[in-house]
Length: 496
Ligand code: NAD
Image 1 (cartoon, protein in one colour):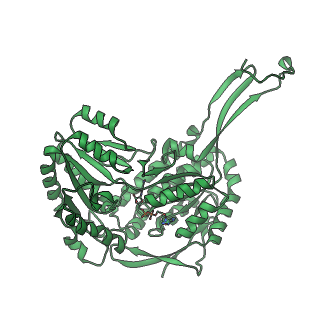
Image 2: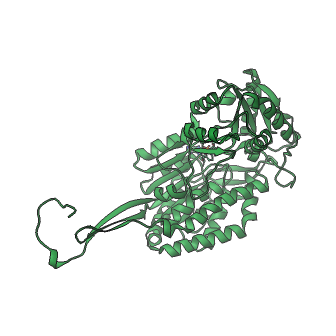
Image 3: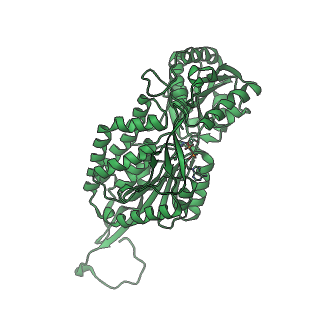
């Protein structure tokens, strides 16, 4: 059995004898390899290597750091088929989706290439007589990232690009369900010229995460995953005095107003609900269909679902792949039992899709109409290919529904009325808003983050907030000796 180890000190570690977990090919349901789970000692070794490498990296010129990012970008583009193949093999996403994920990750590397500009400080000449004041941003030291299974390349790239270019040493703990993409990123960073110790991968489970939270030399934690773990990591990390940004789960709504182009809304929601088998934190899982939009929208979605091809990524015809594990698939499918029991209408039952009959972790696209906010299929983050339709009478009711939800990651509105869209952007209490755009993941030069239970921390991820997160500010007040103006003055310094 192939054993995936760790990346410490610029190389893969030798296989150990400690605990390991299975890595499956979700399209076949068979175990493909095993991944080593880092012990406390392994995490300590990784952090020690990062800490040793940090001072020289911090002192490396901005242009050299940016040059390595440029080279990394070139290598990612040259090897994108290999990265995507890892995503398909271990996550199950179809190749077009895997390449899309990678492209959105590469955007963050491109953003990081501009770090010399982003790290410029302010300068005030003559703030007082002969005194200049200026601000600089400096790296934190060793910083860690803990990432989820659903974007095994993109979410690590959200974090590592800015962390590294800002001069930090970054330790990644990827998801134990699909760790190979992170190991390939490590190889490419080394090939790009990154010194050993500046990018580290510790594979593993809770033991590794707990040690990163506890470790006194880890200055900051970036987390992306489910809400209960995000909240716990935020609380424990900040209690240890660390800087923490912890992004959690989601329940993203699409509001469809009666004036919307129903065909366009249906195309958009089918892509946003079933792409990546619904395992996206920005997936649309609920439509709030307003008034007379509901009937034609449900009919249009049903018609499109019938044409979707579910299957393994190895089949070029496949548009939607499997879920990540058998347990997760079964949990998702359980909402197709509970929903109708609570009064929802099961319009399309994905358990009947023929892909669900093979050994992989497949579940076909499913549609639940007449969903109510009291039902489990509405309240829970399902994270699978089930779309729910909540029928509401008015725009106000739709906004109230969205604003009452504890999650607030993404939201979309479909309408042809510019005034309604503008009012929605003002009224809605959600971090990322799409106007006739179903998955409004911000481009890399903005920042990504939800509100409420979808994000714990003050700064969003990547973009300008990422640069802020991975650096701390210093302000220097300076005067150079000028004997002509020198005198003893015991008063409090004033700006004269
Ligand atoms: P998860 O919370 O189970 O795992 C995320 C990471 O935390 C993994 O590296 C995992 O090994 C680690 N982990 C798991 N249990 C832990 C514990 N008890 N203590 C410490 N660490 C632990 O999430 P997942 O299933 O990998 O990913 C899906 C979730 O991530 C969904 O809730 C999804 O909405 C969310 N997500 C959010 C965003 C966002 O930007 N807000 C992006 C992607 C995914």
